[in-house]
Length: 159
Image (cartoon, rainbow, N blue to C red):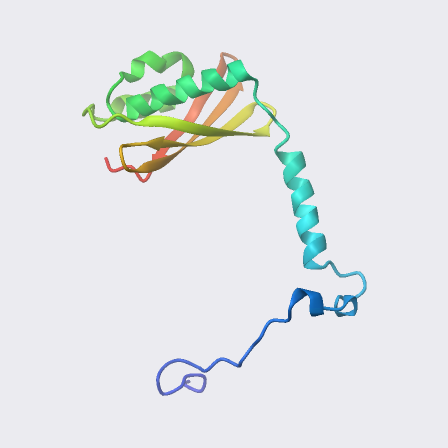
């Protein structure tokens, strides 16, 4: 079945020129159908309500300190046992199992916090080396013993 292939392997495209936004008439949108403008306005409203959570300044500083310490553990500059009160047992075992080879010091520059559930915080941020930035992600959950980090990863880091 080679009916849809050209001799060169590619099919030619039909010429297409987009219509300028000002040239569009309102009659092009069918009655009851959302236009792209309506959809974008709805998405913007959802984002505003979803990300209304703000963390207090002391809470943000504490979160930044814990993440900085986690980055230092990942780089081998700090013992994982120093964060036992902040980590779940599963994450403690994973971090302790990593070989401790001291590498270049990361600097945690910024963090962004989202609250997907009442007892959960999800954090992303950037950890910088001299000439490179790495993304990091973490999840904190509130349980019987307070806030604990359940997941932490530096993305793109070479082990």
